[in-house]
Length: 186
Image (cartoon, rainbow, N blue to C red):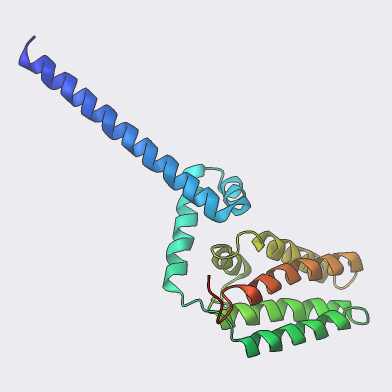
């Protein structure tokens, strides 16, 4: 065989190896993102309509997160927030609208104290918190959507929406309080 045929065969073989390596790396990256983000991965893919774009968004979230200084709450701070939540929850019976407003505010305060940016719009806050709390960020989104729907109805919404919003906010709130507790060994 001529030398040029061997060169073509070698080039095709190298290209095939590179292609297989790239596909394997991409599959590994996809698996890592799916494992880290869980159902948030699927939601992001659905929203983006394109897997590559969604994965780029999730990697961008991870990069933004790496620049944040997320830290645990002290035991005293955790106890103070837990007590404050109990007060908000107890007020729900007599003042459901105000209680949900305070629950949303309290979630944002805890996020801020942990080191998450809270000046951004809701979607940015949810995206930032999804990196550490992908299993409960759906609760945050659902609670916020229920609260907005009630608020946009000028108080004519359903009290059940407010109750559900409280339940959803509580899931993220509790996760934020418990995450990386000071003094615990991970």
